[in-house]
Image (cartoon, rainbow, N blue to C red; front, side, top):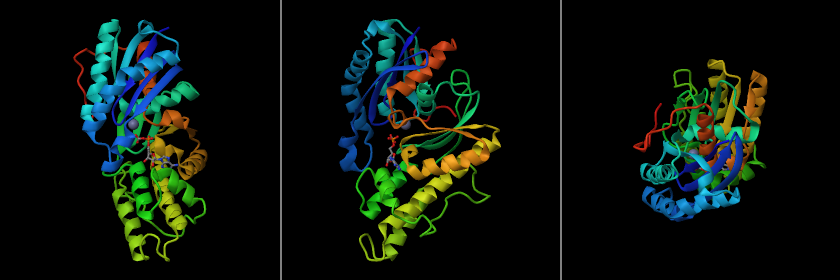
Length: 339
Ligand code: KG4
Ligand code: ZN
C-alpha cells in the first residue's frame, strides 16, 4: 500500500492530504482568504507568500492527523496547474523537494481533475467516463473525464468572464448581502419567487458555444434592474425575489449545459463539484434534470468540494495504482494546464 501525499496551492488555500488505495487518511488546510478580502480578490503575491509560510506546517499537520511520519509517504502528488502561477510554484517547489528528499516518485496533477477526483474519496471509483461541472469562486468548467490515471482532462467549456461563485459574490454585494455571497443569496432566495424577474440565461441560444459560460452580463442585468427599481434598499427592490430569480438563472444555465454535455457525449454520470455545488437550487435542479435524463448525479460532501490537498492525493493515488510514469523533477508550473 502506497501512501500518497497531495499538495494543493493553486489559489488561496494551502492544502495537504494523505490518501491510500482510494481512502482518505487525513487532510489539512490553511487559507489566506482573509488577507485578500480588502483587495476584493485574491492577490497572487500575497497568496504565494502565505503558501510559503503555511506549506510545511500543513504537511506536518496532515501527517500527524494520520499518525504517520514523513518516511511513510510513498509518493507525492502536486497541483501543476491551472491556477495562479506564483501560487502553484510554491506548492510545486515543496512537492519536488519532498519527493526528492524522501526518494519517492512525484506526480504533477491537473487541479480540475483533482476537483472531480475528490468524489472518489466519498463515493468510490468513477465510471469509465463522466462529465464534471466544476463551479466555484475560481472556476466554471465542464470537463469530460476518462480514466483519471490514463486520460487527459478534456475541457468542454469554461467561463468567458466571471466564475459562477464570483457572480454570486458580486450580486450579493449589489443587494447588500454579507460575504460570502453564495450562502447569503441561497438563504435570501428561500423566501423569494424565482420567476419574479426574467434575468437572462447567458450563452443559451443555439448559435452560442454549447458548453461555454458567461456571468458578467447576468451580474450587470441584476445591477441594472436594482438601479432601475430604486437602488439597493429601495422600496421597489424585493431582495428575496431578486436573489431567487438570479439564482434560478445560474442554476438553470449550469445544469442545462451539464446535462446536455452528458447527453452529447453518451455519458451517464455527472459530477457537480466546487463551492457552488452547495447551492440548494443548483442541487435540486441537477437532481431533477439528471433523474429525467437517466444520469447518475454525484456531488461530493462540501469539505471535499473546495480546494484541498486530499483531492490532489486522490489523483496521485489513481496514478500510482495504475503504474503511471512519474513526472520529471524538472516539472514546471503550468498555470493554464493542458487542454
Ligand atoms: O470552491 P470554493 O469554496 O472556493 C474557491 O473558489 O476557491 O468556492 C467558493 C465560492 C464562493 O464564490 C461562494 O460564494 C460560493 O462558492 N458558494 C455558493 C454557496 N456556497 C458557497 N454559491 C451559491 N450557493 C451557495 N450555497
Ligand atoms: Zn479549485
